[in-house]
Structure formats: structure tokens, C-alpha cells
Image 1 (cartoon, rainbow, N blue to C red):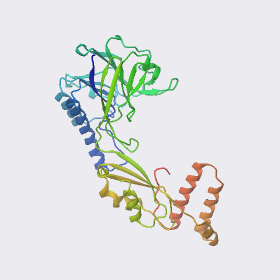
Image 2 (cartoon, rainbow, N blue to C red):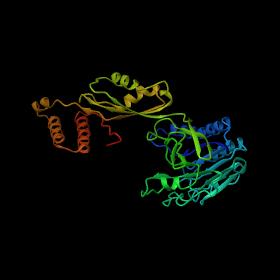
Image 3 (cartoon, rainbow, N blue to C red):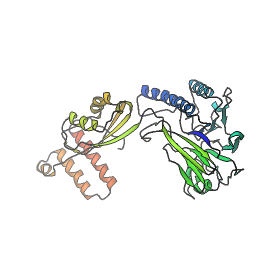
Image 4 (cartoon, helix red, strand yellow):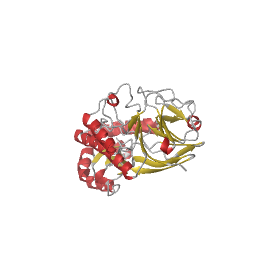
Length: 378
């Protein structure tokens, strides 16, 4: 039985601007994204894949560094004659981006146009279809009404888009399961979703999102990578391969009752593993602490810098209030506390309760003459 071995990746977002981390780390991360592309190409060569498919958003925006383009060109040229097939996504759509129109791309690279195109590989009994975003938004589904031309061939479709429930809308090429099922394809190589979907099947058609090969922020947590698989008529199998250099990890740490920074950092370090120095951490502090303990996120972050690549500390603790003691003392601070506590008791809306608790903490810090920290959710 004819079978084709492939590497499928998407959403590298090269030269993406990175916010929320120091500038020097953002520049290092951009370089690591480029290196990640090299790692993917080297993996494809090591695994003897027959085609590489990049399903959109190879680049993040209109402005791309020449050094980035030069690196991509060099790595693709290194693996000739392995075909590298690309369809543009919403971030690197064809109309607004100059880099796909430049000359000098290697002969083994093929970029799909804004209408569905087809590349035949007769020696593999393979047809690969693909289509690129011409604009950043595509509200009409590319796969709607599509069907492969020759059911005797191994048929793959490369497309960037949103798998949605029938009737739902998306600005990023909505694709329904019925579109996939009626396409007469063997495998749909998707891009756009930044997490690995696993291998899915509807009718006789398999489909997959490989996710992004390298996380870009705390909304892209966990191990990131690419897919290596093989496809034949009526059957596809895949294997997820990690390629990310660093992970983004979010941990909630309950520090109820602590009274020193040492206790806090000890509790946080319990969540670390042997790769903590390579990863990004967001630590969210929870629990009730004494109103006399004005926690500084900066102090905690400094104490953890040697244990992580980067750490961000969010203080969402609340103060444990002794209401009986408050009622005994008619100071301005206690009047304020009593007022807020009574409003919390009367509220039935969780959102309002959490807002009042944060207001209580900020008010106490202000009345104590302490520095006020506003977390990202306030």
C-alpha cells in the first residue's frame, strides 16, 4: 500500500513582538523561535520525511527581519530535494506581506495561492491541495463545497482555519466537520489553533492541529511541538514530537498563614522541577494572610530569579480579618474594613465579592502606608 511520511507544523509566528517580559528576553525568544525552525527542518531530515507541510502563520506580521528570511531560505535549501509546502495564514496573509513575493526562494519550496491549488507527486500517488489567506480575515470557509478530484490518490489538504460547530461563525476560515467529511481527503493538515489537537477523524477523513512549535506566552502553556506521521488511502497515523525550548507554566500557590518571605519562596519552590531554570513561570499567590504582612511581588521575584529562567508573581491573596477585633476599635482603618466586610456579606455575586476583596486589600495597604500593587486582573 502506498504510504507517505510527512512532517506537519504550523503557527511558528517568527519575529512576533513579545510583551510582558524584559526587552532582552524578548529578543532572545525571537532568536529561539528562529532556531526552532532549524530544529524542525533538522528533525524532518533525520526522520526521512517525504514532505514538510507548514499550515500558516510561519511569520507573525508584515515586518520581518532580513536575517529571519535569510535563515529560513538557508534551512529550506539545505534539505533539498524534500518539498516544503506552505499556505499563508491570517498573520502572514499574501496581500499585505512582501516577503513571499521576493525572489530567491529555494526550488523545493512551494507557496499555495489565494485559490485552492494542487501539487501532484506521481511517484508517491499523492496530491496535496492548499490555499492561502489573501487578507487577515476570511469569513467564508475555504473547504465549503470542496471535494478532492481523484479518490484513488492519497489526498491531503493544507489550510489555516477554525474548526467550528455547524452554524457557528469565525473570521478565520470557518471549517465544519461536515466540510471535512465530504471533502474526500485522507488528511487535513490544519493550522491556527496553538495547541495540539491529537488525531481526529470524521467519516473517512483524518485531521489535526499540531499546535505552535514554541510557546509565546502564558496563554500557551505545556509542551509544544510538531507532528510526524504517515498517510495512505483510508488510514493516517501521527506522532507528536516536542520541539519547544521552553515551557510557560502557571502555578497557584496557597500561602495562607505564612509570615515570612522564606516561607513563601519555600512553598513556591515545591512546584518547581529539574527544568525550572529553562522555563517561564507565573506564580499566583492565593490564600488569607495577616493584614500586617504587606507582600511585595518584587521581593519574591528576586528571591526566585536563580531558580527559573523568568518568573512573574501575581499577588491574589486576601487578608484574614478578625471582625470582633475590628468592632472593638473605632479607627478609620477599622471603619473602612467593617464597611467592606459588610458589603461582602450582603453580596450574592461572586464577581462583586472578589472585587470587594481586592478593594479591601488595596485600602488596607494604603491606610498602612504601604506600596500598593495592582495585579493584572484588577
